[in-house]
Length: 337
Image 1 (tube, rainbow, N blue to C red):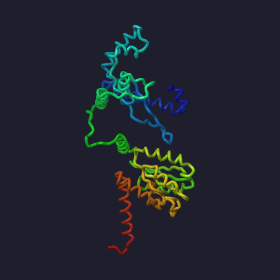
Image 2 (image 1 turned 180 degrees about the horizontal axis):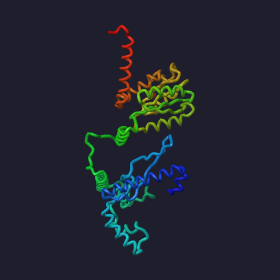
Image 3 (image 1 turned 90 degrees about the vertical axis):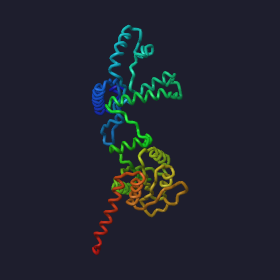
Image 4 (image 1 turned 45 degrees about the vertical axis):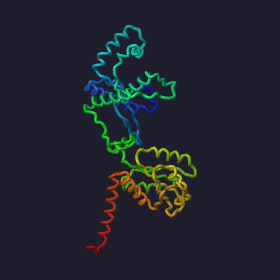
């Protein structure tokens, strides 16, 4: 994209901030790489804007996943040779030259190695429907390059994961985000069938907040918007962060049964009209539980997150709440010794 295209896409102010941040990130990255005997050839940065309009750098920065690097000494040795051959005028561009002189191509620390390996195997990305499988030699070489550049950039020896640590990539991402405070390690979504249920939704969210459980709400009518409801639940099914759903629907509650059938997360029915029995007569595989009070519904979810998901802050909030209640009862008993 050109700068004019970026301005048209996100506005002049945001585009200018993105440009300034990108240049600063690159300058700092190039400086650090040079200290380690590397050249940061090129890179890309990803940005996002949150609900308050604040610009954030997202994803990783200046790593082989988004950047191309090479060794300074190799570059200084090979680039003059490339310049000399290009000066002769026999090639239109460097890519053509390197096809005839592959030994002059500097070894890159980047994902480009994988792309080049696939192309060497005859893969045509604009024609082929499937990608060929890399050989073990390719995988080892790619891993070696990543490990080598990791050690050079950080100045530390690469530590192989412990055999006892067998987290999936999703679990590892969730653990890291939780460790650095970006997520809590649990989240609740309050679903309601109508915006007229907002007072009850807000009460549920307030009760969840007492345990430090982040939450947000969705308005999706099971009767009037079944497709939208299903799409929302399918989206939450992909969450790598453990979740729970509170179904808040009055009248004939089709929301609880539908949500508990479609969702992989537990569903707690807490209708705004608490004596509504329609949420407890659902057919097989509609597995929602029913809790009348928003406070008890929030506590049930907190117990699940505190025990099953080991969210320590939520567990502590539960213990503190119970102990605080007992202390009040003891204090209120004037005849206690």
